[in-house]
Length: 135
Image (tube, rainbow, N blue to C red; front, side, top):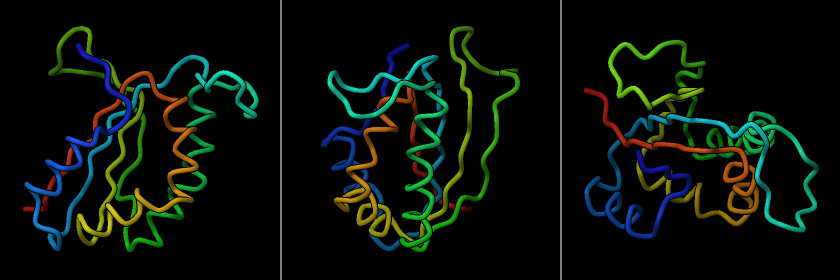
């Protein structure tokens, strides 16, 4: 299984191309934390676990979601994997609703949000972000 942490320019171009800008969306986040956060060499951030680093990110990100008109619909720990490849494991699942993909992009491109994303990158061993639309 390929480990992926951060979006790529191509993945954001695809999202922009494939999802109409004003369609309400719900982002499914699958998160696997590092045992120890992996901050860049020379970082000013103190050592901590991946979960703690994600909490640092979340302290800012959840207020940014709200400011973008979004809301965390669900946050919970993964307990079991009845239908999954044997090597696929997730620690936490988040569902985050946004009024539009445009609002999501405005949030993630904001300089203050970008500055806090170092915690997310340091925290995660693997992640998935899946854009969905309510039926």
